[in-house]
Image (cartoon, rainbow, N blue to C red; front, top):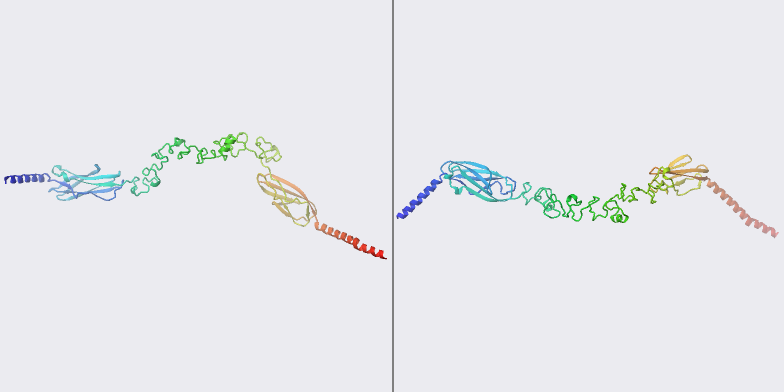
Length: 408
């Protein structure tokens, strides 16, 4: 009996001392933390709420501190709580990293000796979704995580706004990689830095020399240049400022034109256009000039009968004819053909002048005899009738008369 009494007395003393020891207790109530949103995104601000309760019989003061993975969020939040009351506390937090986070709220009473430390802390675990470009759309839903304008499906570095492609697949983006195609040629010396099979593009046409059949783009195929001795990597082998493709003498720096194609360069040729007129006497030494040809070359024309002079077969070997001028009896007519009616018999002079697109002219003069062909035809028919009459008289009438005379 005495032992039970002593035990009871001992327990009473312990309880009394405990109650006395925690007579100034503040606890983090409700046991949970609350948030302004259930979706936590990197770079997006969220508000964290908590509550502190005064469990004592006196007004108490203290501070609440919030932590994320044991790093304090912002500054201390002061609380002053009346007897038996609860004070709400909140703080704004912008997570700068993503992943799992332990959020903790802890009360620090001013008089910690009277406080029960076992109820001073509450915590919870949350997950922060990554948002690389900070546009408020988590990467899992964002079609362009780094907001570089290249969709993630086509971006070798979807989380790096400074890189989009990795041509050689070496894990280093092309913007930072000094040799994008890993062909051993640094990009600054590589005409085709994204093609491991090509490094030189002499003519800058976007096609590497290995594939390009005309490396210098002079319109002469490389194989032809090899055969004729010109340089397939130099569009002007002889350095005369004329491209090998248009230079009839690509290996002669003193010749670059051959107007008449006689294999003698114009600088040497004394008759560049081969028109029979020496260059020094030719106003158009590099122009052959037009040639006059008539569809018909009339000798006789009937008076009062319209006649067409046609020079359409005329031609110009190195250009085109731009003008036809006819002069007939002092009158001028224009066109490659002209129709004229002569009103007087006799000889008439016809002059034709044609001009080519270089301004060089050629002229031709010819004569036609204008006759009254109808009169001559009538006279001819009359004479023919007379001859026929004489013939008939001779053959039939005279023969009949002779027969009668013989009978008598």
